[in-house]
Length: 77
Image (cartoon, rainbow, N blue to C red):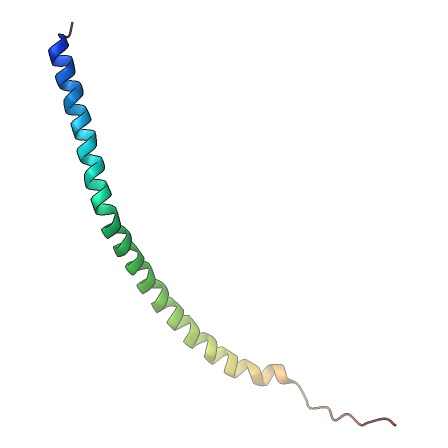
């Protein structure tokens, strides 16, 4: 059977450990989020840049295909 002093000592150590972990996590989260956002923006900007260049090339080549032929309408009086 546990003695009262050892049980309280173990409980106290567990609580201190939990408080330390939460304190460390609360201090690290802003740095982790800023790093994560920076990495995401790098990846999306490089993908978006290559996609926009590719998209512009496709639009130039496909514009002539989409135009069709010119129709001259006459006014009816």
